[in-house]
Length: 164
Image (cartoon, rainbow, N blue to C red):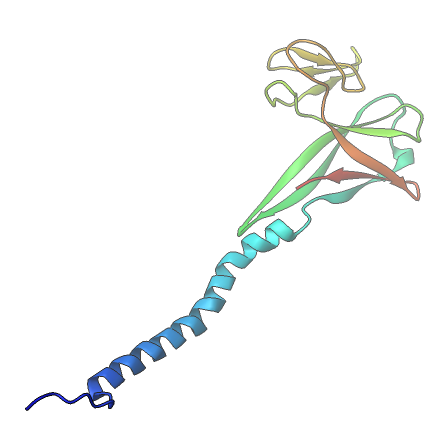
């Protein structure tokens, strides 16, 4: 007996094709939402603006001519990881209307600076860096002035812009 070139599909080939088709359908139906669930937090954290304006209080509550320490809690979302940190800054006004906000992090190696009111300077204890009251580096190893935050005054309230 010779094989005929009959176009009929054997039962085995039909079942194999049907199983492959059903498996592919189930894989697509389950895989697309699962993939979206896995990568969506990363996409959302990239799309989401992470910077925010924080209210620090009334402009009248800040002393003129002397830096004051302020702290804000910042929530950073990186994919699934949520990190809460406290940003510390110094707020200075010389006239009660114009404000600057400076980071408390030394630009040399990232140590935290301290305000020394008796000497009218910021001092970094790590390597004896000195900044004036406006954050300008005046001696020691710091390569540049203290970093600044954007500030705005709205209806007598002071706001600072902190990036996440």
